[in-house]
Image (cartoon, rainbow, N blue to C red; front, side):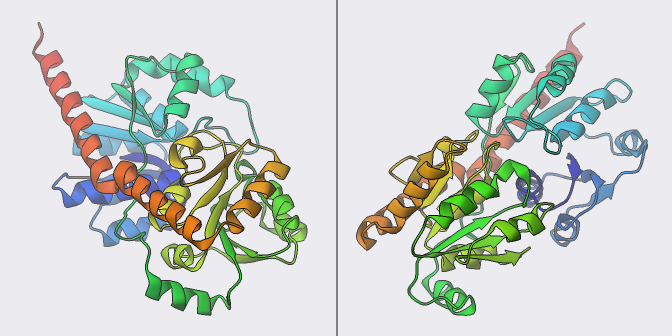
Length: 358
């Protein structure tokens, strides 16, 4: 597997989870990354070899390992994997696109990246999208061919992320929570997540508290914008406990693929309120597992937050059960890993057949 970096983000976490899951099934997996990060020691602890690459090192390592499959994640790694194929024989190259728009810092333009994807499309045996929304946008933009496109969703460890009443009581006590309604959001504090919109929506709430877990370049500005009902927790490694401690999850993104945090929240039995960015409507079933509102609409987000918090406990418990069921049925990591195995085997078989042709 090749990925741009090993910082703790949704795409990076998904790649790491898949690497460990495949390794547990007997696949020989090595992770290449252009930058290290918090996930590197976790991968090593899970017996997954990691190589942090310097300039020009990718081809050297590929020549040594001679992998049957090079599976890349995110824009720069996807391009590198495709171009490496021109210089090093690789039987199968798979690209994974983790967002509707893999844009750079504060850039909402897709044109140049779409052109580069289009120019190198034939060098990838399959381009896999984490949501149908992401696949649809890239195909419509002719960034990828429909014939080589697939959709395999992100997978969540539904044994790690699950409702746990004992953990809930302990975590709520640690957060100093009494009987008030507690909201959680978690992720990198950056422009794509549009936290100012969430803070505007929370400013309209008369009850409840919002916990924000995560860090990022916008942290200082967001603290200045936050009202008294918002608490910043910083980067945390106890997200399952926080999920159990809270009563609802909120997401206000402008750009997404298929947010891991929504899948983790659903698996934890948390109803969600989220903006309809990318594959969010595939993760949150409107009015069944939570509420989906238009992107950029603070009034709609505030109304949905108020609506969920005001639900009778029995109705909210039913929504929580439906969220958990949706996560287990569609996004369980075990099933998603099997989907990847099926694709790998298809691609390997196709490569062997092509090699036999005169």
